[in-house]
Image: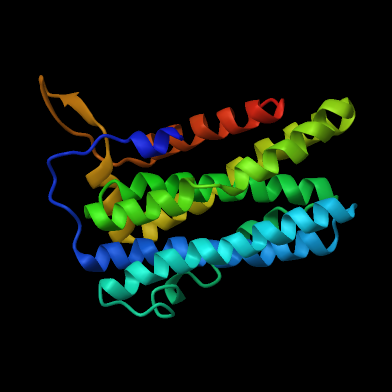
Length: 237
């Protein structure tokens, strides 16, 4: 379970349904984008076993998305419209991080999906209980990282040169992914409010109260979780 799930609640009032639908839309869009990426990775996988594993993972992305969209409808939102504000969100990230090998593409999915999921889990702490449960269940049950990790870890252990290259690539990927998060926080006030509502209480002015959801706080949480994911691969973050 990632640290993002453990962000302590504050005394701030829960977000309204509009904010909830916006975060749910981001989660659903991320799952759709992941499906497309995984389908492409599967088509070019070096082995039949890898092709099958990634194809199954791609299908799981659509299952995760569907659970989120059901909650959008329960809140009175439109399943298609809720994703439209995020269409193209990852275009710049993709343009800046074109993999030169299949393995770099696989690590890109591992890192990018991990950062996106952790950000959404942070923001989910500001949701109503039912919406929060939907997001947490969708993003923590049988996650892509749990399936990616053994594949990457195995090849990294067998090929030290490749492992070194992937470690460097991972550092670049997380930097670019955090850039997307910073852009989302600056452009989507609803998501910034949700992160603020889920921020850990800290001592302030001699008393205790909710911490402001600063970009540096978010980046620190996401970077720490990224480091743990890379450690599980045997790669230096």
